[in-house]
Length: 468
Ligand code: 5AD
Ligand code: SF4
Image 1: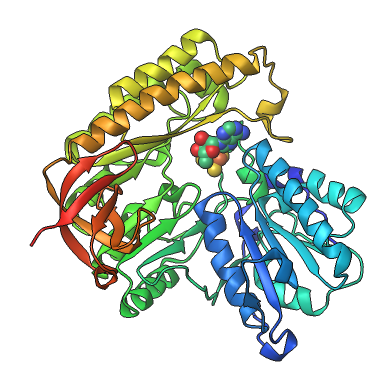
Image 2 (image 1 turned 180 degrees about the vertical axis):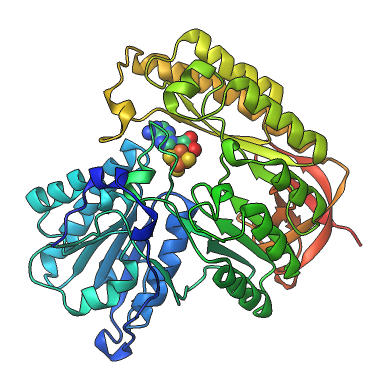
């Protein structure tokens, strides 16, 4: 049993990272015909980890079910970024416990970021002994072995923070059109509110040759779009000697000729002129940039450890807009950081008014155990924070609608990704700028990049017709 150690995240040096091929156990006879139920919480990183988990457990015989009642194996792939994620997971665990009461051989496991939190592991060992296995984000590849050797008591298989960078991993991708690709793991920024550097460990970039090989293969298989994933993608390569920088990597990915390239998430601090140039000059790098602001107040940004001021952020924003005028820019904003005054919040609204974001993901500050912000005085009431969030969301939604309205009557390229939830004979897809478009048409359109004329604009989507 290995319990994670939050503090170790701070002790880091480059030599601790090992690059190795994952040795994967594949023997379908082990769990032939057994069923698994997998629930994923949180960000794209977790969604992509779940694609890896699916490949691994199907390799030892499991088949997927969407019914908890039928499952022999339940895996909850969890998120730790905000406290409510914890409540959701433990709420769902209650249902699992109920199922297990009548089926003792059911295996219940928890993985993802929450599994990396010592307090969560301790809580499971103390109060949730029906959980069979807790495994961390650094040892997913070993899941087939863990299941094969499962013990009768709860086992905790969580590496203490630093992991190896494994290659030779295969994914059961949810889509045949768009693919996620990890280009790096972890984060070195240590923003004071954020638990990610502790749960995902220090920044470890993958080798560019492995990334490029994976993209070549996806292109060969017919994929139209790749999204390069990382907590701080534009710091790519900084942790390895003689590695490409992020703009250099992007240029090489662009050279593969794949139709569409996206990347998330960028940190404003690492957003260089060279990066802006490469996005501006390459047609297959999509003009869509997620640029987390977090707060518009320089005072709060300093307390957050974000490494930029309001003015520097706005300067960067203007630079991007000048070089790539059609770029859609989206953001993340936290309201109610400890000590945020009404004036600080006004500064955030001011930036939103200036940037008129295409979309913004807004959150109320959530205190995470073990982060520096946990210890800050927080005199602002919950009601005040909720009020600020409401006000911010009204503004954000107005700008989303305004941004979408600019598409009315225009013809744009849409990568059609699947059937729409809006009804029969409607498909949906994304513009280059990541706007969701619903289009009347049949499934033969799926996987194509079509010219679509936009007929209607709403806050969160567009409606269009195929241009003949
Ligand atoms: N409280 C609220 N929001 C948070 N985020 C990260 N940590 C916290 C926290 N403790 C938000 C940030 C980040 C996004 C993924 O989640 O805005 O960009
Ligand atoms: Fe968290 Fe992003 Fe800051 Fe890294 S850069 S610590 S992932 S908010």
